[in-house]
Image (cartoon, rainbow, N blue to C red; front, side):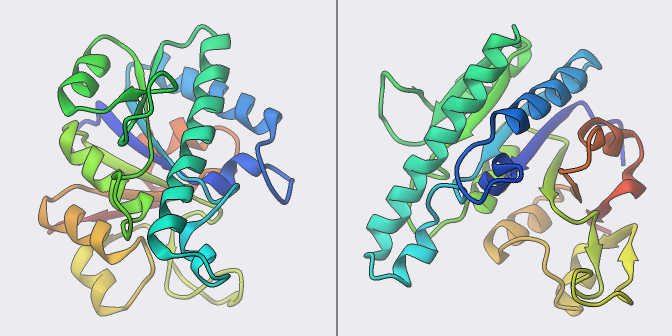
Length: 237
């Protein structure tokens, strides 16, 4: 990989729960704030797409009788709550940030445009993108791929609870093999789970590298950018 400067982080809503079963854990927000500060102070430009699964997940809602469109819209609002919480924590730590949403709900957040987002990065702000793509049937993985491309990010970081891409589920199969790096086509051929297929195709077709890593381990957000082997690099040949 060429030198990384501009980064987009996909942060799941579940990552904000900490040890809780639901909602937002303040200590976890504070840890992410500290790691974001370290990354920004090192000179990286950072955008974050945040999920909402710690509050409401649209697809799960349909299994309980919610209309799919309404369920996805509720999930979008959950991401806005998470984004507001993260932005507030960063601001309390004097970390410059801007909170954007893909739907118009001023004055809670600022409506997203790629021009404003790029200008924000160039002025040293952390971007927080919420409400996914603003459309039902699209995941926040797809939003992460889209925003990464729109902001000319060098890499998409996908934070998970495991330290990369494996040949099988490492939580179920102790013999699963971790890949230090793997190309997009091999991921498809081996039917490995990296992200949803819409997001995956966007990254592959636009040659946007993806690093899958363990977001729950303290310090990994910064470390994985200098030592990709701490996670798994998914790349185009």
